[in-house]
Image (cartoon, rainbow, N blue to C red; front, side):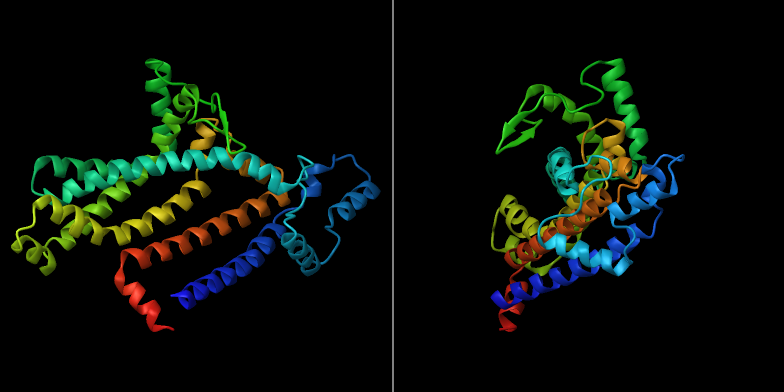
Length: 326
């Protein structure tokens, strides 16, 4: 088991190394930030001084080596716009994005799994068919349109919740969180619903498909033949066996919620990383872009590693294969 874990860690390090090369080269071949940061009427000498100051006069491989050396020291560069460490600027916005992603994923789990379980167990009933029809809307409706409709109905027409911003926050473990205050929760509700709509539909349909695949299996028939209650059959034998693909999707989709919440954060003026990266792309703030992408890569790698470990706990076959590699 320990060897299996070290192999996963080694693979994760290789992925991070490969992605660092792709991210750095991909960002540095796009545009010239000097054209945006320096006024058009600046002299050639001023432009050359700016290029030298930003380190853009070095060959690309030399810039990448400097980037690696700084990376091992935890330095991902200084933002051209904010004049502060790029990682620090991103980490200031990270709690807001993580909070929004956690709220959306919690909604997807709490709503999607029970509804998918019901739709799989009662597939021939009209409520189950209605749920599956509704899940199609969750896949089909554009996020920006749903967000605008939520604001129009619940903020403008009914006035129940705020339309934008993060609201009041409270400090916990040195970080400001919205969910710890009533005003923050009211600001969090609409963007979380908007962000979770697709995930609820995805988890629900995946759970339903897993239930319908597991129900005809022999071990389910055997469990019922032993006289186990239907509740025990469902919660122990059915749910446990369908959780493996569900855990995989939840893990990967949580990473995507963090990385691709740009539209929702923009619509609701949520001060997270999504809005920051859009602003940084507009002004070619390369350190912010590189730091953001590297942080997202690291998150995806860590989430995949956690999913692999959860696999080992949920599926005995993974544990047996890991022991076989010793």
